[in-house]
Image 1: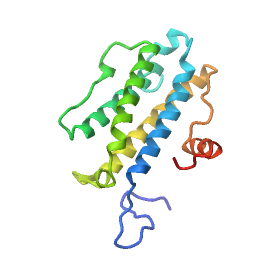
Image 2: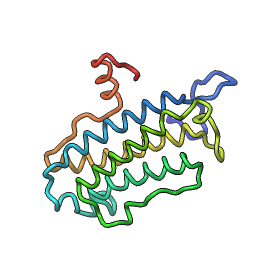
Image 3: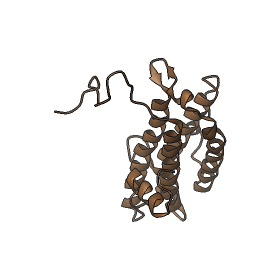
Image 4: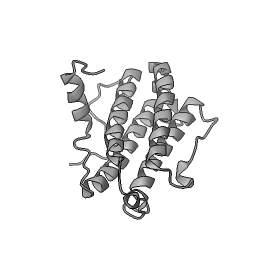
Length: 182
């Protein structure tokens, strides 16, 4: 029988399922690794493929990847500013070039590199409007997984598969490099 949203997992009575700050940093490292694998396939991509719309819903490859960036920026800025700032909406701007998108991701990763080390276990455990911050942060990574999957399918159709971009392949790559769980 499938789990329902009201079902609980096997968590000992009196304890709550939670992620720690290091777990969140690990998930964001995976997110960057997988996103870089997708972005690396965009060099010399036909501009018509980049700008095509209505491939997945209303979006095409370029707008999917711009949305992934924009959502990531908005979540980081919203959480970092404790809801004071909302962050950019690049989806409402003209589609950037592939190089511009890469530059924007580099800037976002720089901002994450400055912010993620400041997260504490207490911060990620904090519950805002009934939802722990760690769940919101895990959502950001999960959201990116959805859109990378859409982009990967479109790129694969163009003969440019990113290969295996699942979390387990990131973990295995770290293990092979002698850095498991880092």
